[in-house]
Image 1 (cartoon, rainbow, N blue to C red):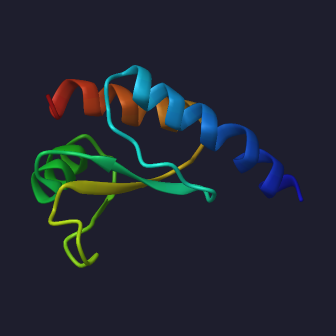
Image 2: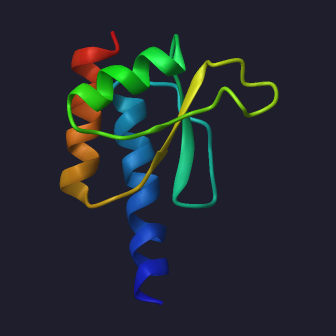
Length: 90
């Protein structure tokens, strides 16, 4: 129950913060979701260089490498991802 409550509160806040940072985020009812990028493989590489792991979507039918999948973590980790995306994916 504690985990469910954590994600119920923090996932929408994380998604909104990414949107406010200028990213296109697909809505989701779970704690992971898709964020549009120019090239998912390049985004994965750039974020890994900053110590952040996200998932590419090349094997998701219809997504054509235009998204990465991210997961809600602690508020501090979420902000680290947002800052890394702002600094390395623009």
